[in-house]
View (cartoon, rainbow, N blue to C red):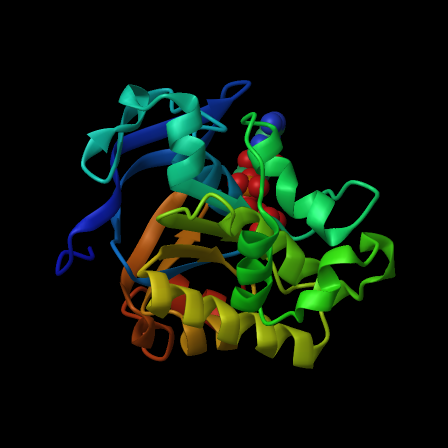
Length: 243
Ligand SMILES: Nc1ncnc2c1ncn2[C@@H]1O[C@H](COP(=O)(O)OP(=O)(O)OP(=O)(O)O)[C@@H](O)[C@H]1O
């Protein structure tokens, strides 16, 4: 169990099921504040489900989730969405310019994105200001993913959830995204929770890691555990014997 740090997200005996299938089983763990924690594990382990519980997209059947010490159910939906941002592998974009896409989260809240702030967001993700007025359809996969991250940053979330954000990108774009997430974590002290199938990436970018299998958190600790896990099932998984 990770206990050295103040928790940003705390799960207390969380269970979640769909149609009688027990997907998350009695999860009691914390994501440390201001750190990068990666979630690794075989396909179907429950990683995405766990992430969706952190921003209220799903609710547990039983147990309690605390975000920054407060029960998740005590947050207003808008407040929670601002506090906890999520970026997906292929986030949907609307037709039109980068600016139009960046402005979307605020427009949905009846607010406006001023151009100076939009330029700052582009700067945070390593894109030149000139990208602001480019049509989204003309962007490369890596550039599009950077815009998607910038759009999540519009609300300046204190907790950022990332689901497989580099899996469809080439090596260079993948590395750029890794660097920019680490930079965001350091600059804004954002808590990052990052699902990845890339174990090398988990070791490089993460301070901590959770290994999940069949709805359970099997082993947690600093990312070094991926070099020398204690649990035998985790050793099999890391050797590629469990997909
Ligand atoms: N709405 C749903 N209805 C039925 N089954 C679901 C639903 N959502 C998730 N599951 C099942 O729950 C299990 C966990 O899914 P989840 O997507 O959380 O796993 P994951 O670890 O993120 O997998 P992957 O690495 O492949 O994305 C899977 O067996 C999945 O089929």
